[in-house]
Image 1 (cartoon, helix red, strand yellow):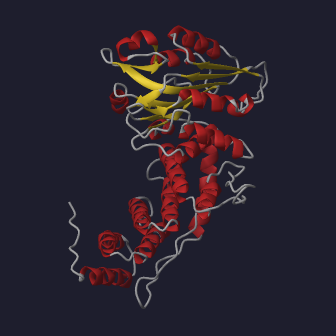
Image 2 (spheres, helix red, strand yellow):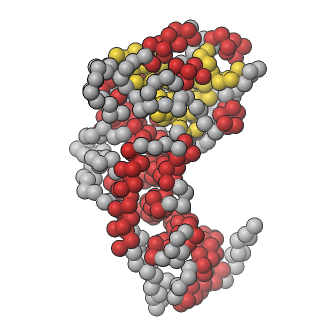
Image 3 (tube, rainbow, N blue to C red):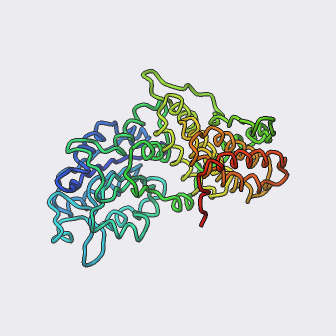
Length: 435
């Protein structure tokens, strides 16, 4: 939040640790550890504002009305507000309402010992838009998780920017005194970045590197991001449009070679702005203008392929929600993910991502233009790197279908791909069945 505007302002940071999440006697989420770690970060850094700030920490609270009073006081702050909640999300089985569990909350007394989730939105709804950020690091229990799956989100307040994760029940434990991955990554990004990233960038970086369990709910969802308006998408639109124009000028068409499909090297991860690959100590740097691509490229170049892939996927989800699934911005991120897979040596995934991008470009304006041809070239290059028969045949069948659909493609290129596929099929491996 950049809220250093004129007028008397006073910010507020409210950090709340709820009940610990335990599964089969193993601690899955330790809210007190999260709170202690986050409380060490200066309030000005948390808020992204230099206004005078009050900080309140609630840890071990058992009375829902105490939490309500603190929420009400925080909502009355005239300046920027950050509300952080970490703990267990539960539900009233009879009323099917979500609750934020406090220390001592039991399944039989949820309505009397936990905070109704709607209290949070109710207290924040009167605040002006753009002044409120809610950060969530939660774990849902077996009663709450079905309700989250039904809704697909966790609403707070229309005027608040909400970022966070909700892990499903049964995920691997992190240890009784361990700071959870999402909160730890949020803190690490604030500490290592020479210029504070925006909240949405922090969220994408933290969610991508947190090692979240499968099925975790990441907030905001792509649909909710698509409903947002403001300066951040407009700034990113200018950056993406500039890069898209540069990329369009650099496209190369497919060219057949004598001995087989030409091994056409794919494009590197775009780096439209100069930025160092690493800061002292070996940590990749975030570009000063907020462009995450140099940071992701630095991760991949240093061998941290898993983190790079997760961050790229988080950013792809973001731009898909803002600009659309078939937008040029979304396609760029799909192709970035493809090239990251190539850098990691996962040529099967890389080929499939390139083919997916090619199909989307074929269905869009321009059809078989240079972008579609370049995506097909990336798929062919990665396919020629495969040396395992089953993978060659399975990917090759789909690749031939892609090449056949490209209008204006030199027919010799398709013939060479078919010949290579047939040579591998003759080994006796059955053709994959398509349903």
